[in-house]
Structure formats: C-alpha cells, structure tokens
Length: 119
Image (cartoon, rainbow, N blue to C red; front, top):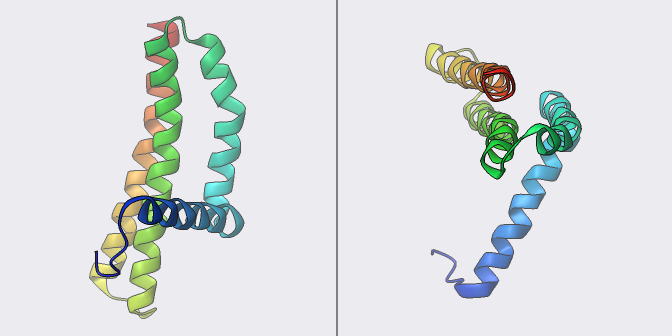
C-alpha cells in the first residue's frame, strides 16, 4: 500500500477505479460494447433456460468470462501501446495472445450452452 490507504477508503477507491475502467471500456472499445450488449441480451435467457441454480450460474459465468477476458486483453493492448507504437515481435505476440484468449472465451459460450441445454 504505497499510498497508505487502508480499510473502507481503500475499498471505496477500488470500486471507483473499477467502474471508471468499465465506463472507459464501454465508451471506447467497440468489441467490449458488442460483448456487453450480448451479455445483457443473453443473461435473462440464461436465468430462464437453466434448470437449476448451478446451470444458471454456469450459463451466466460463461458470458461474464467473455467480458473479463476482453477487459484483460484491452489492458494488455493499452500497456503495449504505452511502451510504443512501433512494431516489435514481442508486442505483436502479446497482442496476438490476448486476442487468442478472447477468441477462446467466445468459443466456450456455445460449447457450455450446448452442453447444458442439449447435453
């Protein structure tokens, strides 16, 4: 804790900066906006289609995972861009790996939904 904040003030600041990041992603990242809209549309369907609390939780978590991975990918891209815009093989690799993680997170949604709803 370099700033010396502890307890509730630290927790409140953490909430503020988290929502600041979320607001930025919704405002600036088209991919995140699209995935967020899909979450908003599919989350009620997940709650309706799941037969048990566990099924509903897994369906919802599959959607939340996409948002989480997209945010982490955006963070990697921002950090790489902060270092420099010139091409470097490791910068490209970091961005490609982040993109691959998003791709896998998107692929797991229909797999999980299919296994739960049709398995």
